[in-house]
Figure 1 (cartoon, rainbow, N blue to C red):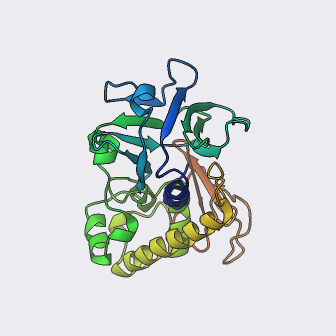
Figure 2 (cartoon, rainbow, N blue to C red):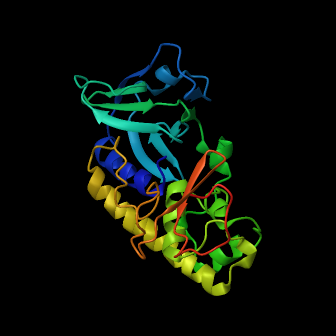
Length: 277
């Protein structure tokens, strides 16, 4: 699932490549539209975008939002688990499960493919009307340490679950929550109420450092191939059984509620958990 580092890098490429481009044609495949496309304007997804010029692209949480030369028109994409964008020429072969093809008058295309059709492409007059968008918390780099402490205080659940809540902070998902908690040496299933002031300070610093460094690495590894998701640099996520980069202990795995959690039992001490490998 693309998270803040990937989406930030993608947004930067789109700002260079797509802003200023005019849309010649939009095709939703197959005709009639897959469930990933939602038109909330009544204009029609394809006809509503045709002829519009892209004036800006921004990231908000796990959304990418396209603005146009019409102030009451926005295209908001939440790629979720398997959604990916691709910049291509019309002559290039489409990736499997391509559902939307946007062709620009300059000749290039922006394509959207989604293996599981879980992502959502909204055409709306205002992205703020989307429930998931309207409920987003602040961006991780926009909160001070004191604000971070204050936002964390009401939560009593497990720290990983809180980090991945969009209403707590926007843009952190399963993968980078693992990386942040490993950097902070905190067990993912530690209850928030048990965190000391020092724990919170370390967690805040680890969050900012992990996301900043990851964005730089993704930017370098992705280049302009925005359909890629370079994550080879990750320390522990999806590296079950491999040695911890810090202490050498095999990385543990917990799989629950369709979510994979990786952590180091030595670096991130905590109680035994049923289902842990």
